Image (cartoon, rainbow over all chains, first blue to last red; front, top):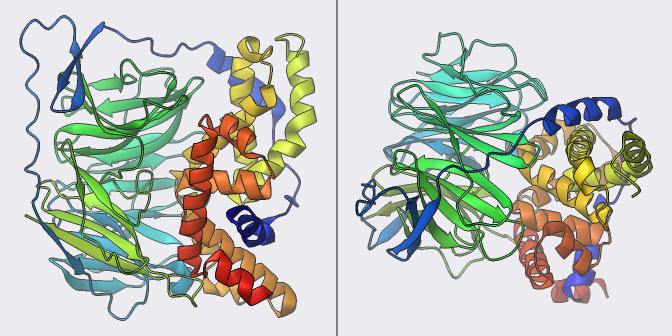
Length: 388
Length: 175
């Protein structure tokens, strides 16, 4: 049996038609489409000058006459990493969904296929299991945790509710339909508020605070996702617009900045993934082959670098979206501007997912799955890589 | 397409909604999300209609927009919804042969949801929508070679997640 025959046979049970009545609204599409016609895609500002630096493409404003902007230093690239399997307290399958900036606290979820719609959340500290807490509502996933062990998340479904978990207690965050996506060590939480096509990015300054809208420039389109929150308060989110995706940064000084498309790239979309090491990392998905890859953007100097060609390497990413957390049999990770192969079990058919890289680049968190040959729901095994 | 008018748009969209909805459903495995994908696609289509009404292969263009919308939605965690859907309290509510088939589909959908998004799109377009390699390449904006490699990677990933034996072993077992 070749790949084609196998694929047809394997996926055959999924063939089918939607059975319910359609809820597609053509007049609404025309109204919204007409509104989008009025906008213009950001056309780019200053001309750019490309120079090669350290094997990556460095693009700096042409007006700069000095040797170039001062960029954040890259972390030291580790020379060796070891793996540590995290304890699960008897749970067979646990997905590690988020970690704090220092790489000491981690949060995960018992695989719903095993644990049911009220699967317990799991919390680790320094490699030890701290909590195995049943969730109070259905379909709640905690997506991030901070240095004091406070975790945040939301329920899946059309009417998401935002929750935090602190000292063994779940707290419902204020706001009706809301998603809490990231929390930093200062206790600031970011997420979104609204429903369906009307989500807005918001910030909770504490667990008891009302959500505050993060003001976006007019004409930003439809919020796609709040992606990440940096320790300095920077927030990144992206929006869908007529021409694709726009990325915005809310900076600590209160300003909001649109992130342009990487210069000298063809049509395509830049998808933000994470804030790390002073940069915004993301994937550029080109309409034509050749320019796709991992890029990073430094907001202060508006500098772009292409750090990985192609989409093979995965990068440490915030857990809420899962984007950029594609799994591989041979996990690789970007440390600053360098791609490092992570140790893995080459003898088994394990498949690795990296969820987060710590700010000091010494700890990576994630999970792997192993084919057992008999169990249709392969277990997720939470894992740390300790790097020096 | 004759022009960029609303009439031409309406004629095109009304004729394509059933097919678009079917592809969206096969991609997402969820009727609500399928309708959302179609809604977003036809909205984008209207916004661009004056410029693209004369595009030669507008169907491929529209499918490209929808696959991109699907990949975007992956970021919102819909894959997890399918895992929740496979959770025991729902699966336990069915019975008999029908429940077994339903459970198989649910488990397979949950496994497919764990495959990297682009590979999912390739697998669905090729094996559920029966699109040839060249057409999938056009929809995804990549080479035919990339579609083939993504097919192989996607099947390998799915096989690992499901704990399936290799196709050769599988064929031997069935014969």
